[in-house]
Length: 238
Ligand code: ADP
Ligand code: MG
Image (cartoon, rainbow, N blue to C red; front, side, top):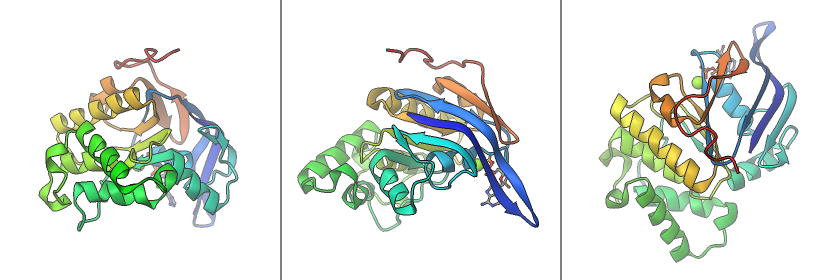
């Protein structure tokens, strides 16, 4: 679960401060895709950065998978991300020299719960994930040999390799055409429901709203609950 409670974040702006997030409260529950929508510059990426414990808010409380992350040290925030948070950025940010399988293995060996796992077990988990994102046939390809949509699938699989409880996704379809974007959104929804991650997903593109279970609207840093959209909102209630 992700809880942002009355969170405010400002950035320096000349002699003044710019308020990027303004007393925002939101919750993202396990097994649910929670969408954040709003105009460019409204504060969506800043909210994700707070939910990832990448930046500390000026005020308010941040709880990530039961851990109060409001005042963590840099080292503790890094450890929390490594163990419990998966992040998918707008651009997949893959390492050019590594194959799809190697991108995931490298991440698995970096740390988290799989740090002491034996290589064959890591390999089996990586191959299961590549299969889950539809890339079993392309495991040995490098980023340059993959399409934009396939690269984004690698990034999604890589974000899940350490079995995070929380998945944070920033505009995953912005570099894709509509059909490929819809396929990526449907994939994220399926993985969220199957693996029960608390998924917080930023999108400014409401054509993909059927893959969202719940939405919040961000306007000038303020967050309001959106109308329930398509998707399977409520389906995951116990
Ligand atoms: P969105 O993701 O909705 O486009 P952002 O969270 O990136 O919005 O930005 C919200 C506001 O904060 C914008 O006015 C942006 O210019 C400003 N901003 C974002 N990041 C920084 C930063 N690192 N330093 C200063 N201002 C920033
Ligand atoms: Mg953004």
